[in-house]
Image (tube, rainbow, N blue to C red):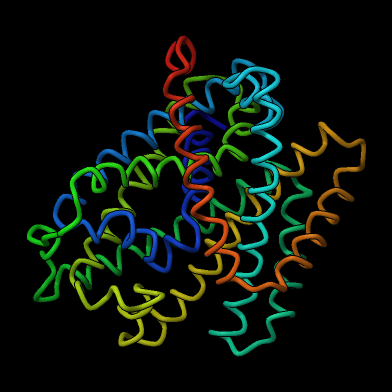
Length: 347
């Protein structure tokens, strides 16, 4: 496969890893950007720079140090002793986020398809296992299908939003939030997503044969994430401030439309949950392989079984407990990856 083709696969995998359920529902975009009014157009630019620069940097460093998992990256960033503690903490958090994704998949089945929550969990676990045992090739294959469909959906949403009477609200929206909070938001958002994405970005960079492909893939992925952020922000802005009262803001926009658009929306939510789930599970399995001598397939099955048990707690409870803690850790990690000099831009 030529450089452009390999780069495109990297970019699609990057997008699919970052864009999760919170993105599809509109809740992440609303909380990190749209609530801050017209300045969100500029803060999305800040996120764009961070995703392109730091996502690429993670992959390039991984390529240069021949990292096997994100633990190798953390040791490189924090030193041997602290790096192992950070990795252990991240292992727990990634396991928790994976459980959240699995619970979210079950909720899609029960709340939107009127199918048993338990059946949703089991079918998702089966699909995840079949993908992950194929390794990075399986993850790339899933994202090469899912991400273009996501883009199609966002184009539909954008067209509907921009044609509405309030389609240009994003240019005039005001906000009462202090400026420090407005400008901290893109750093929080990028840090939160990048620290999770490294579970895939690290092995992705390490297994890519040349840095030029990585750089182009990072650019494609970062730009793609930015376009989807902007479109989501424009669509949500057109329905401000009333849209803030809904748990699934994008669903409020989509429901009044043709049924086929709503069906696509449900598929997108599930697909984005699934891409995040397999990314985190794959990263976890690589991490644990360095600590425990066990067959990789059995490792994946054990991880899925553990996630299944914890997912009985429920989606909403898990999100409310884990996400604030993850945000704090993410900012520290973001500072360290920015601070690291001498790697990531040369080669």
